[in-house]
Image (cartoon, rainbow, N blue to C red; front, side, top):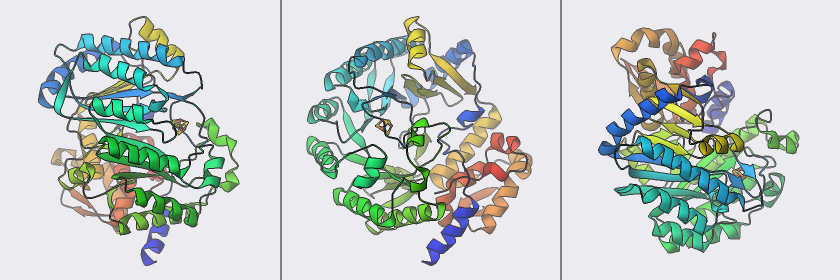
Length: 457
Ligand code: SF4
């Protein structure tokens, strides 16, 4: 009870919108136009450097969904017309060919993740076709990690068998909430039996890591409904759980205007939903990795966290050691370590560019030396809970970061040592706030720093 009281006070204090730091600099600070020739050069150089060392990561974005979940903020296209699969496959295959021409060596794929949208919107046959197309001109890393996001309502045994055959061992199911009334209001009717069947089938076929995404802060959720959802989740023992905070941004996610805002829990109630869920997960053997993620001690994510090998990119936390991510598909983001590029979010414009044998990049960012150093600081906070700074950055840190770090230290969220920050147990719930102190773009942009603090949990 005491812990809940302390958390509530701090969460109220630090509860304003802020990034999840899946990139640094974060997307709002990227340039709306980037020099594509410069991007190609950076891509080629980094690929040649990284491919022989650790291989590369590949992300495939498949944007279609059959129905609209009203809470959703993802880049998706709603349709029940499966004829769209063919046109999309042709485009993404073409995009791969364009990038493949920039690679002087055969790419070694260490990590491959398929996200969406609903990747299992695509038939097993079409998914297999796409994967074979890419894999036939690549080398599979001996310790490759292939994963996919699955919808419990339409992930079939055929999907799972085909994916397993191609080397997939991890699947993340979007569960969100098991309560029927909550499901009705978010327009995602998904009986628990479907979640159970999808989980059991994946395990039976041989998937070794089944992950669930859950959300707290949805309309009509109560501590009792969250308790039921978490208890049912625990029954199925997913290896990892991402327990995300619902972000209500109806000005950018139009679908969120479809439900009555009075059904949303107040900030105080939302905190209780999180604390209830977290308490149950921890009581049942899950470890809080940080930034909304929980894992069983047997899961690779936990082991990577313990051994300081955790990494974070656009897919969230990963165990991968690659520093080079190629994203294919509409709205996908690529990350070479020193540059980002995001594809066009408009399907029409994506098709048009790729159809003309051009990259479909819309925006991006080339990192300076300072950006690369502060990106590392932010990654160390998120992935390891501690960071040491170089003395050459002390003037910048003193100007922008220390005023916030000192305040965070007073609130018991971190320990500030000699050129070092260590996150406390309490601070684990406020990683975004701590990272924001190192976000020089945000700090320079926000004169008084008041808007830097985020919706922490
Ligand atoms: S939540 Fe998932 S399934 Fe629902 S609309 Fe968004 S991307 Fe599609």
